[in-house]
Each structure stands twice: as structure tokens, then as C-alpha cells.
Length: 355
Image (cartoon, rainbow, N blue to C red):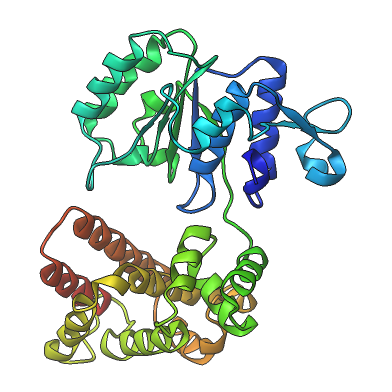
């Protein structure tokens, strides 16, 4: 499906974009924020198609849903998907649709300087040149400052679209020069239905994977495609091991297990890099459940592990949970920056254990 029709459960962002286009009020810089895998990049590409489509077509309000309404007749504008411009953009062959993404863990100043050389020239054929900067939170400070110059004096017929996880990941001066559009996590039911339809998984397994994906289509697709992994059993093993070896008491408590047993867990995790990031996300979700249980037990994600969650919730404070979640965030960033994997995981396990 071309354009916005391929983007699931993001009616509000699409309504805003189509309204801006219809009114001729598209700003020179847009910032799309939201967790990974909710359609930010795809929406940026669809909007580039819309702004340069040679045909365009209306989708009725009944087809699109009431929240899409951007035109007076209750419809919204969608790119045709079949004209020369749309086909080029969809196949990533349009010379004026420029995608910048991190090289490795960072987006460096050389990439932004090269971009500056390109946009200094007029667009080749596009009505509106689009510069899509994916994962803008990965820009180095030098790259961010270099981009700021282009945002302050945008070239003619050029629109910047930045995607990032959250506003706080970017320098405030960049945020202040962009129109912010927030993308919400994908609902659990939508991800579950997708997994059942695409991978023919049973509803129970699909719901577990959807919960672990935490609102991200891309994570759910990755997990669903990896059929050789029994995610339900892997999750239970991991969380039971964390609960047993990394005691969820206060930081001042003594470690419940000898260091050797704690490090055995980090050894297992470091030995399976393919599942490492999903495993760390599982631990974060479990810690979130421990916090949520204190106030809304019915809203925990790992509902089949409610007994261990209740037990842990009685032993750990919100402050300690936050400290442990922050430790996981720090470990994830260090791993992305190519820090020593085993050392990073050893330190993380000690922090989870309260050591």
C-alpha cells in the first residue's frame, strides 16, 4: 500500500501532516518523536511522496477513519504511489529525497557537512526537497551544531524531517526550530493481530511477543521472524534468573547470591549477542511491572509471572527501580558505543543486584 495507508495506528500525526500540506503551511523543519518501530521514518517518506506527488488522490473519511479528516469533505490527501515521483521515492532512487542516518553508533559532523554541500544547490527535480535525518539523537554535539546552521537559514524548497526517540535526546536549539509531532506506541491488539496474520503464531505467543515489543512494530517483526527462539520460555528463564541471582532489594542490601553466580548470568547474556538487546528490554519491562504493581496490578505486562512480580514489589522501592532501569539504559548505550561487552554486563548485574 502506498503512502500513509501503509502506516498503522498513527492517525493523529498523519492528520496533522495532511492538514499542513492542504493549508500550504508546511514548516521548513519537522521533528517526529516516538519509540523505535512506530512508523516515524515510513511516515516521513510518505510525506515526501505527498509533497512531490504528480497525481495525488483523496481517501474518504469512511476509509481513513474520522481522525484523518483534513479536508472539508471529510477526506485526506494521499500520494498516488504510482506516478514517476512516487515510484522513485518509494524505491529510494529520488535524487532530492536525502536520507541521513548514523554510521555505527553516531552521526558525525562530516555527514552534516556533506549534506550542506548538497542542499546548497537547487533541487534537481522535486517540488520540495526532503532531508530525512533518521535517529537524530545519535548526532554528535558537533554534528548537531552544524545542522543548526542549516535550520536557521533553510535553503529554498527544502524541508527537514528529523526522527528521534524523545525531545530530550536533542539539543534545545534544534528542537526550538522544528514543528514537533509525537508518534504513539502501537497498541498491543494491533501488534498481536499482525503477528498472528504474518507469522501464523498462536494468539497466546503473539500476545507475549507483542507485550515484549512494547509498542514497536519493528521489534515485534524481528521477534516474530526469529521462529527458532521460544520467546515465552526465554523470557521466563531470564526473569526468573534475574530475580534469583540479582536480588531486587535496596542498594544497601547485601547481594543475595555470590558474585560468581551473578557473573554467570552476564556470561550467558554476553554469549548470545543476537538476543542481548531483547533480553535487556525484557528486564526493563519486568522492573516496570514491579513498579506498576504497587499502584495498578491489573496493568502489568508479564501477567503470567504475577507472583514473582508481587514478591519483588514488596521488597523494592520506586527509587531503587529507577536506579536499576537507569543502569540498563547506561549499559545499552555503552554496548552501542562498542564498550567491552562482558565488563559492561558484569557491572550491570552488580548494579541490578544492589552491589
